[in-house]
Length: 161
Image (cartoon, rainbow, N blue to C red; front, top):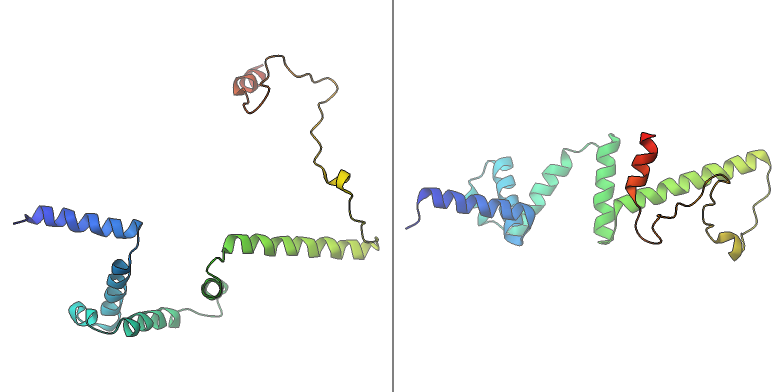
C-alpha cells in the first residue's frame, strides 16, 4: 500500500508534468474542473457529461466575460480566430508584418507629400551588403581573429585606457 506522502508526491509530480507537457487527459481534467467551479456541479458528475458539452460551456462562459470594446480583449479574440483559421499562424510575425506595412505606408505618404518620384528598383550590385570600411586611422590588429571568433579582451583593454 502506498503511503499518503508518496501519494501526494506522485500527484504533485503528475500535476507538474501536465503543466509542462499537456495531454488530452490533462486538458479534459482542466475543463472538468472549470465546469465544476463555474456551474457548481460536483466533479464526478461533470466527468460523466459529454466532452463537447463541457468544453463548449467553459469556452462560452469565458468568451461571454470578454468585452469587445476593450482593445486588448478584442485583439485576444482575433488572435484565437486567426489560430483556428491557420494552425501555423504566429502572432509575432503578423505584428511585425503589420508594423512593416505601417512603416512603408508612412514612408510612401512622406514621399508623396514631398512630391518625390517613385524610386527605381536597385540593381543586384546595389543590393549587395557592403562590408563595413575601417576609418582611415583604424588598423586591424595583428592578433585579431581571422574568422568566427571575436576576442572580447581587446575591447576591455580599449575601455580601460
